[in-house]
Image 1: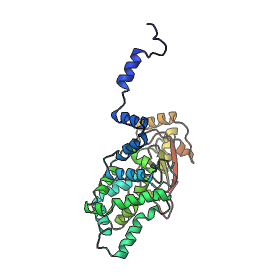
Image 2: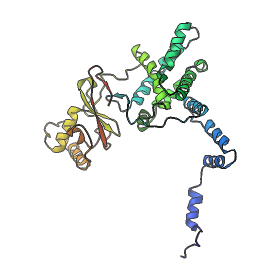
Image 3: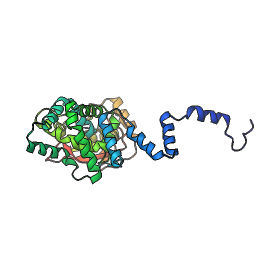
Length: 324
């Protein structure tokens, strides 16, 4: 048909915009806040009253707002990221262990914050709680310290540390990709502050045998053969899934992909070897320190395509924990 007059929107496009792109009530409220004379105050109120449903997360947001700063959204890119060989996410293993020991965690904080603790000991524990933030920038340090003191303070103690336990349960139940996102969150973010604040308690519980080890040297670590972290010095972590393979399995995969070690790859049937060969044929040559690593095209545990890898040589003094 004839084109509409210049400047007039076609009727079908107008229908799509008005029926399928209708803004939500929250978006309308935000638009009004930004367009009115009192926009700044109304926007502040919207931010301050937004709720996630998790008290500890909401309290962090309130403290940021009061301090006039935003959460640290700068990704670390893996710098200074703690790696536990065999575990896809440090955040996941920390909070899953804490969740499994939540009764002991509650009892630990109940003990160190008890009103009858001797004054000298109480001062030591209070200092211990906020010591991880000593080198943070002043503004962000104040936020982190206020958050921790609220999280394990007198009011929360009387409530049985429900906010802490709720937060641990929430964080432990995150999906795979969100655990990984927490690992790469900015150092001064909520994720960073929470790990800094709770790792000390985790260490105390682990030392007392009240919590499973974060880095158990006897657990299965390789996605293929299940060997333990201590049984191999060289490990490869695959990205973006973050699963692990030991060097012998990486080498076997390379031989199978090249068609040179079929007899040695007894654990793999014909279909598995064909699948690997197809994956390798289509995989791009990834960066890596060794040719064996660069030839693996898919994770053997989750079958996700491997985009890049990180090679880890486990240190003798810490045979099951390493930095990438």
